[in-house]
Amino acid sequence: MLAFIGGTGLNQLPGFEVERVAQVQTPYQDAAVPVARGHLPGDSAAVHFLPRHGDGHTVPPHRINYRANMFALRELGITSVLAVNAVGGIHRQMGPGVIAIPEQIIDYTHGRAHTYFDGDAVDIESVDRFTASVTHIDFTEPYNRSLRQLLMASADELNLPVWPQGVYGATQGPRLESVAEVRRLQNDGCDMVGMTGMPEAALARELGLAYASVCLSVNWAAGLSDDVITMPAIRAVLAQGMDQIHHLLLTAARR
Ligand code: HPA
Image (tube, rainbow, N blue to C red; front, side, top):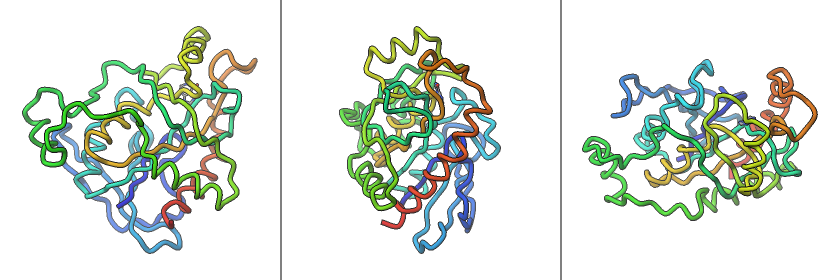
């Protein structure tokens, strides 16, 4: 069972016919997590869709309840998650408009509820049902290899150029980085920078969900071009890039 997590620029899937919206209760917040179930054009299998920032894109990266979101997907019986993330490009291959399927991640976020194994009885009980008490997950390869291959094969099928590698640096946001921060990320080996990659990827692993990310570069990270980073410029890249990502996800869902 496949779910997509939409990020900035992908609050809904074009053509997605919603069958029902499950309101999933979790131990991590009072409000239910609404997850849409439906069909993509021309595809008979049902898929689920969860917009990470909420329906109206109102929840900023550091306020997203990542634990509730991922738990809700697990409750619905989802086993594979394809997440979409907008990023700033750091590597010279990662200019605006480029789509990447990252293979590694570095976490610079702080103060986010980042684990189900928090010493809290509720957390552990509810998660133990699925994960048989493993508290130190293996995160050698943060993204699921088979899902990454599925994405690459789907891109090939579409003749869609994607950068099949890269290290994602997850920053706290919501502000963008300083030039020195980007230099530090670069020195650390980050190829792209975004605000939502973590703790999502780690929580997926804690729950035993296969997880991979499709990243769209929407700007050069701070200091890497002469242009000031503006929201209108980002939106222009988003519109075109998310259209390509939409096709990529459709193809992946059919395979
Ligand atoms: N930095 C962090 N997150 C981002 C950026 C960026 O430059 N662009 C899109 N998400």
